[in-house]
Length: 310
Image (cartoon, rainbow, N blue to C red; front, side):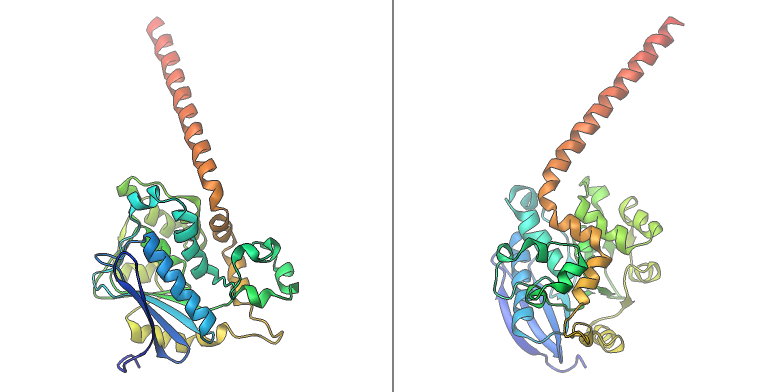
């Protein structure tokens, strides 16, 4: 199937260099190939280009399946540029988390801004309210997503692929590694939650506390990826699981795929949507750790004083 030249739908520039190309390798299957040299860092420019690409697909084309992959052979993505992330106002919520939210629950505005949507519709976790709402289908658009991991996926890139419904990994090269432990970079709640919800405890621990580098065989055996292969295998998966149909309206006339996903991953969704509270949580955690450290020092001093009197 993939041997034929796919139909090119659009070519979006990434403002810092590179592009996101949308193609259609099969009916209602949309492939987003991103190229942002040298290693597809998750910067504001990258995230905004990907968000626009997803918006174009969701507003201009029929429901189907979205596959994301890299045009750089060595890397799917090398994760965040931490200096950029920590120095760019609004990066976390408006760019990185916005991209993750879109992939995780495929939120769509249909031409209206998110601020214009009633909070009880776009932010509620209540399925009943969403199902009763007349404009629910104007607020969302379901599409199964597949991450085609052609090369290395490190740090924030692992979170990016986990926001997809399915992951297919190159069997010949590349590692998946959540290496924040080695980087000395703490993980925020929205970053760890997706692993807690999608991975078993042993895999969760190996990913985060051991910073293990998973090759393709290990990734498949542990369930980190769905299967091994390339675009042919991704297209085969969409066919075998009839993924193109999953976003179609049911007997009620409404598509519920995204609502079901929202409930499945409700903790991660809540953290992504409540990202504005992270600064306050970080400050409280830092204060708590400082207090604990000072209390530990006092206990040790008391012990040393008592010991010296014996």
